[in-house]
Length: 625
Image (tube, rainbow, N blue to C red; front, side, top):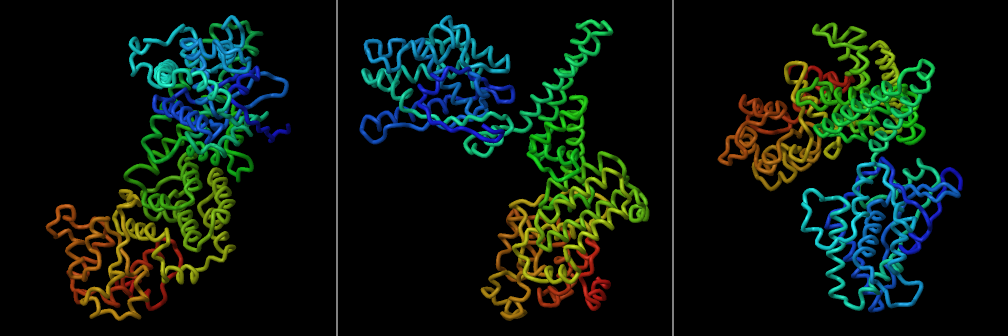
């Protein structure tokens, strides 16, 4: 086999276990976690298939696939996918061997399932000392050995606590024993045939690879049934290996200096303890934010590489681990990145520019960019407003340039392929601490090269943008801009934040709207930015197609329904209320009101994204607002 090839074979359970192999579950695999529900379901599936088989409906049962790594001429297979199934089948064989040893005892057919065969599936040797299943986590192997050493599973459930043994090997054995005992009572003489069916008619597809990275990649492609193998699981094992390697290298170096092994061993144990503690902190803290551990590792990968990855995330992470001198430095750096994200991206109150960046669809690039700015501390926050706008070290100035680039690309309909290389170039320049003017120049050049012009943006934002994913973010950026101060409470875009058509889509059903709108004019503005605001879901549903004078009290919360009481907190919606109460448009939502709102919103977006959108006449009206 070449580096990225595999062999696929279909085996019965009997054939699979008779291949004279030792099956190894590596450190990065999660612990055995099948509960009663999964075990009961498996045995019920076996029983249903057996009944179909007896009735001539079907002759086999498909158990699933096993992805494994096996070197040529070796009798050891490392399980990448399928450890839950293999472990359960091992325990099934053990229970049958210990408590149902009379299976097919009187049957002289040499090819059927008997106690001696089951024994060979569990142990490699006759003395029952070498288990066919090996688990590379001592704690888990110890628990598995516990059940191997039991001579019977009868009445065992009375002596153990469900909580204590939930999700472990002993609980699985007890569940299997109780279920088989019940089935034997029901099937009577057919019980032996049922066991034969399981081992000889239930099939496994074995996918045999000779390369770990490819096996993992293949598993991630194939696995859509359970929990994927996580990059974080693999990294943890890789870092623990690195600590072991560091210890061995230290022993080699220090042997000449005659330093006692006890001192080195103690240093290693302290490092392992520090590693476990920091890793546990990452696992705990990441649950507090809207980010997975594996996404965090992608951000770490991007930050370290500063270039477009040409190989898989895991291959890159392994290379980073190999190149770094100290395993603890790696986990500490990942924890530092997590802290930056927790404090500067996922906090309730944020820099207003970062609030806007949080909505951008290319999340991993944005998060890596923010991490690079914050972590390397080559840019700073200035209290003085003029310094914030002009200083080459201004963090605010750099963030605004980044916001401008990504939003203009988003509005212009550019894809990830357009911005990918620029994103990594940007990460590299930020890591070097390039001047803000250089960052601005680089991003402006990229905008020009992709033909994103002021006219293009203006035309897009004046059109029908109802279904554009950037509409809510644009309205929220205007919201943040109106608010005083440099920080704002972050407003999450979720199913409770609705776009409100001020002139409703079904305006024709309400007579009052017809006083201000004919069909032609209404269709021109209905789905344009001037006719939109944001409301929470309940207010939006309540406002519905009502006339404007009924909508305003709902916006204000001056209604009997307690769920709708209280004025909307959004300034962009309060502005509509304020204009109504000031009688600006004679308490109507007419063409003048929509036009002025369009100018107001486009003017704010023009200021935020630093791009010409308004015409001369609109600039005059905007200046007066």
